[in-house]
Image (cartoon, helix red, strand yellow):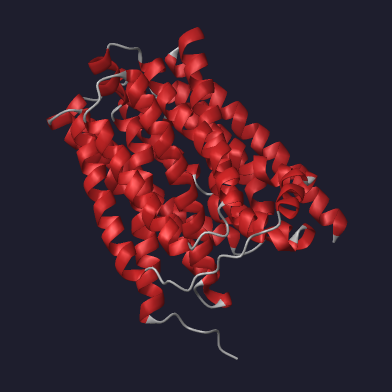
Length: 393
């Protein structure tokens, strides 16, 4: 039998969900590109501005499972449209604030809407296409985040450079309106809305194997964001001109497209087994950045490799969490599908906070050693998890 093919309606839905994750990703990640602008405008340090990144990620990680569990019975279409509208209003509020405290509040509220919307997008993509095409659909939805780094972040950085950082939030507000219009026209109204058992979801979250699998992507993203959060100051320390930063970030995002493609290849066979060594390579790349930044060319090559190795874990860990849930808690696979974005934001929060501490206590380039150490920890955890899989087969 041939696998069921995706119809035009399926592709339109996948495009809409990918557009949504692109908009959400742009809003979340663009802070890295305008970090210095915010710090200078508000009269705070880069490290304090970096707390906006970690606060967003912490809120995302804490709120997403709780809100997903308590709103699983809500009609998905109406709930998603309401959340996108809230996202638009919160980004618009950021346009008009010059208070660090208010900006922090608006970003944390945006994180709640973002986390739930991403999780719902994953669930809708998974349940709206034929079984054999679920992986493809989810990979396209993940692709929205890649495009956010390729197009959204550099564009937002460019806008801030030519106007100010408030103008970047005008951009994200406009993108949010586009996502809302697309979702209103395309999202089906017959999506599932059954209330999942809270007990089953709690049992999933406390299962030792699920917890171990959860912290693999958390540490992987933590390794990356220990360094990536402070990439702009690192680039300026290497001698990169302010006007070239947006171009460099665009190139960084462009390389991450290949990382996304490679992530799918890695996940195609024995993904977790392969990730054991991917994290070792990532550790070497991050650690080497301490030495290579002394040369502009070698530093740029190293940063390119950092982008290439940065998101190789996504597809493998997403499928791994779903597979483990199917094995240990089948009735909570929907929540399992949301754990990957939660884990990534736990990692972002941890990494950006760790980077900030190392930056202030040691020095800017010492964040590279810290990132390498976290990548090694991810590799160790993956080795252990893979060994347990082999022992139980």
